[in-house]
Amino acid sequence: MSERFQVGIIGAGPIGIELAVALKRANIDYVQIEAGQIGSTIEWYPPEMLFHSSSDRLALAGVPIQVPNQQKLTREEYLAYLRSLVMQFDLKVRTYERVVNAHKLPSGSFELVTQALAGECRYRVDSVVLAIGAMHAPRLLEIPGEDLPHVSHYFRDPHAYFARKLLVVGGRNSAVEAAVRCQRVGADVTLSYRRTDFDATVVKFWLLPEIRSMIRDDRVRFLPRTLPVDIRRGTVVLAPTNENGEILTHGRTEEVEADFVLLMTGYRQDPTLFEMFGVELEGSDRHPVHDPETMETNVPGVFVAGTAVAGTPPRKVTVIVETCHVHIPKIIGAVTGHPVGGLPQGREDE
Image (cartoon, rainbow, N blue to C red; front, top):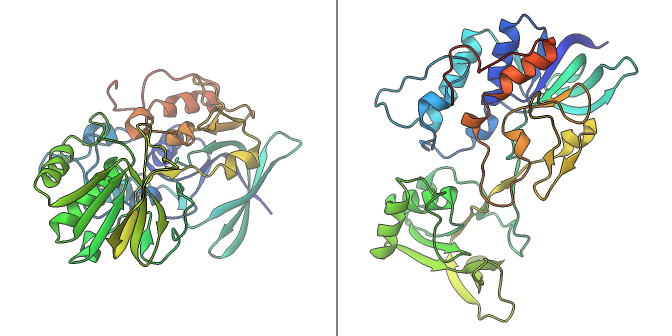
């Protein structure tokens, strides 16, 4: 038998949690389902990573974030903040429970079928909000050796690379931070980037001078306009690229030594849930079609919130947590039938 709720939230990242607080304040009965742990994407960020956004712009539901040094938040501090919100508002997040099937019923409501740790669960909801984020899996280069055990698309702890030869691939925040931090712990770092130089409008302002000085002082070997084409045990074959970052088919390749390889080539959204609900995806980024005034998709009763609206951007990420707070009052207004102006309680205009 299905449990009955007015709203089903799928996802428990920052915006999913902020939406749950808003629904609770509005006395709207909801269920929140999360395939992993709360803030699961943030969970796999590297230890002590600093957010680009300031703490006031990352704050949720009108609850300020205080950090001892008044500086940027770390990964650990933000995860602790998310946990504190769940406890403060007594949010019932059904973690480690994945939606495996969903369909619309003749009545217009939706049935959600999930796989939880204890087995299958079923829910019947009037509306669904997909707050699933936009980074579910790495963008693969689809080259030989990409699946070897010494190759990873996730940068976790720089200590693992102490006194070893490390090849970092990429030129945006993840790659630059990995190169800087691994060099600092004593790794022999080579950085391969398919373009000529870093984009100063994208790379965090405190990382850019660090990586430039490391390259200048030969502490990091920089190989611009190169891209891996074959990863082997102990070496990687790099091919030259043109000004657009595309491989030159007749260019001369170079083989570099590498005990480990970090492919910081970005991440993509998994569109499975959108497709399951029949949400239309459009554009090269395959973003969900939705009404920007209500956040409702082309499927009546199905809404999208948070960074999930972005799909998979072909280049830099433009939709981040701090730009998504405005989704909350729009969804609350649409669900209740009473449009709400402004931002959630306690927030200032962005």
